[in-house]
Length: 258
Image (cartoon, rainbow, N blue to C red; front, top):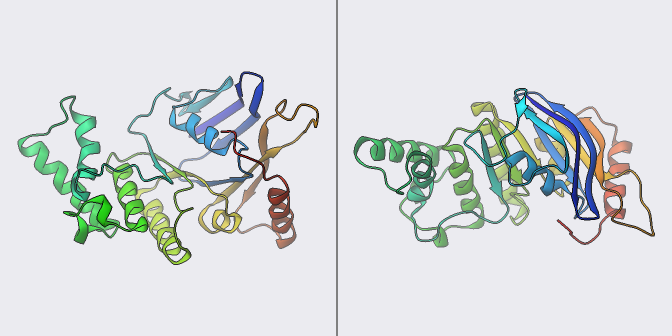
């Protein structure tokens, strides 16, 4: 489904990512871990189309991935992308409105169908009882459920999650894990999820990518970028390897630069 061919990303002389190549089949759940600032979110933005590679290519079904977001790729960020002046139901409907019209309005049967579709999604993510409330009346976990419903209403093939649960309490995170796994299975999504939590990555994904620098120059720390140093199938890794990865991630922690 997705072919990543020798991707590099630079900002001036600052190399963020270098020489990344991989292929992803439809229906895989890829989790991305790595130290802060290693380029995980930049890579996700290239999949979304808000960033472009400095070198190399990303292909979707054999064609260059579109250079701007479209309905095939839904995204959920850690910061809730909701409209505070709209109700929960309206926040989901609005994604369909923007897709269908330039005016920002739907009328008649189209409006009725969009509301019914949004209400069904809210029921799936457990927010049907809150559909007439406003975002400031929701908990953090509820807002993330709303953001997921917003992303799913356009029926994307690919769902991009950028640390969506990092700000949630452990109990709520566990509930969100169950929700995402259920949605992944039911909707046959291909998912890429950035996380700082190695355990979360192994719990959710079918495949885990570790981003890190293969080479470092102490005199020129920005001369080299990160690549995929591990590409691991979930459930088939020895504990010793997981401990080694966890230790390397802690050692590599540095200030964010992306």
